[in-house]
Length: 478
Image 1 (tube, rainbow, N blue to C red):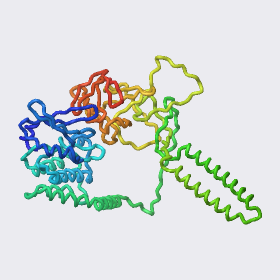
Image 2 (image 1 turned 90 degrees about the horizontal axis):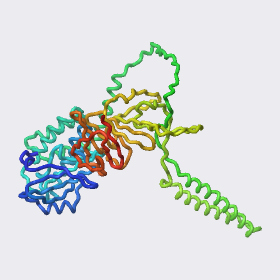
Image 3 (image 1 turned 45 degrees about the vertical axis):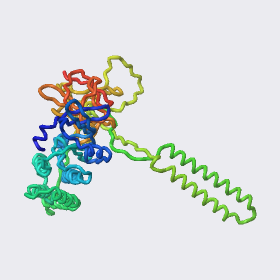
Image 4 (image 1 turned 90 degrees about the vertical axis):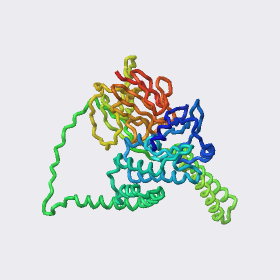
């Protein structure tokens, strides 16, 4: 982005009850193009951040709604773009700039850099900032710089696909007569080659695997020494808990009961009708009449069952297996199911709740073996805690940058609560101090009942009450 343009714009952040805003302040002498503001407010383009303008003292504030979005630079700190994501990201930016002419917008008035492009962390869809005033900087030179930085600083730069797509993009933007239309054409071609490239990559990987395989000698008989089984010693500290292994769909119980009663009713009606027809046609051929009535009843029964046993009357059932977990050690996101006891248990005031530890989320292969984890009681790390249903949840802040949300793969700790944002908040440890930053979540973040502004670091101390949407935690940082 043009440095002179950057110097003319002041950046700040604001929050309302349900939204987060990036605020760009310009001089009151700046000539805002009012018809563009009005047109964009009436014609919503998903590739542009919605905005509104206000005058404040001697400046004009342009407020962009960035709720539930994070900057591209923040996203790339934790995520490597795959080939498809990289091409789709560049395509959406290029198409937005080229398509701006149809909306009578100035294609040189886009802020193109990693800090001012916002993405949906779940879908990686980009939204751009459009400045509703005249700007004379070169958008194509800015795009060159942006793509070079994106390629050189991202991990995916080393992942060349079967079509060598990164080198082709670099060759395009380094051309002396580079135009956005040429880049758009190349990106469309690369996007259409997606299936072919994936097929070639799979074939290449298969050939490499075949080449690395060691063919066994048919004349050599293989022998495998089986280890002697070890005696299993029961650990009295281990308890069996329910572990979710999957889900399945089944019809609701009331739908099954109604269907069964319907069959009994139809059978009874059929018998009754048969007897009535037989009595009223005594001595005559009543078989044809009875058969017709039975077919009608069967058709009615079929239609009733079809309407009764449909998808709306189905429910998901969580399948559970049992696994042993040392109750005195961290168990991550697994919650212990209470075990019924035949003996009454006295409840005292001094009884402590069970503790459920949470640390950085990592994908691990399921194993039926019991894994013992060293106790975290001795770790001097800050953590958030809350007590829910008699279980104390602890979120160990084990990294200098620790993100909480519900989007697996993008956060360090997952909270399965739809009120929590995909990437909700970030905890930062720096110079022996702890800071909290809301990441443009829709339901917000509070410190001691006061909602904080997004994208701004706020220092937090021991015993502070942190509220993430409707989840309230206490900070322990002794």
